[in-house]
Length: 154
Image (cartoon, rainbow, N blue to C red; front, side, top):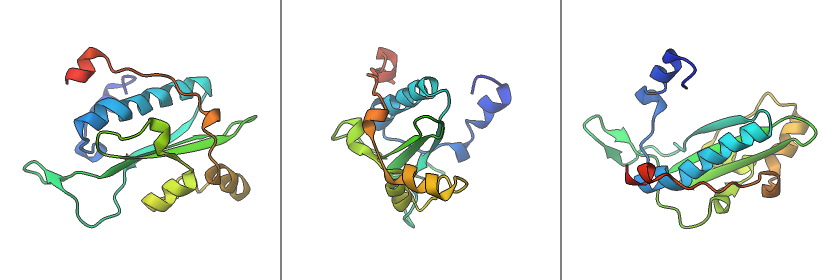
């Protein structure tokens, strides 16, 4: 968001934030965000949709403003460029992880079932059906991300 002051300001609105457990935010979520940045460079461009899973009527809350704390977050990544179109999704609990990042990987179809969101409705149906139903983690090379000492202590 550093490309403009307006973008930087708007990214700090409460409507653009969701409370995350520190062990989740500084660990597996930070690793996933670092990998998505890597994939964006490696694939020239990727579409990324991310947010909290909000399918229940009530959630635990924090603070005087009673901010709801989601139990899960998702990140859906799509590379819709030839020669290799591909997609992958992650649905992760808002908690310290109990498995590796790719243990939370799933098809985009599965993320749509969990969230109730149709992520890429404008794709041609034949392409959408194929990309959203399949998952091939080998097409998404993993990079190792280690939080800096400053991130660990925040």
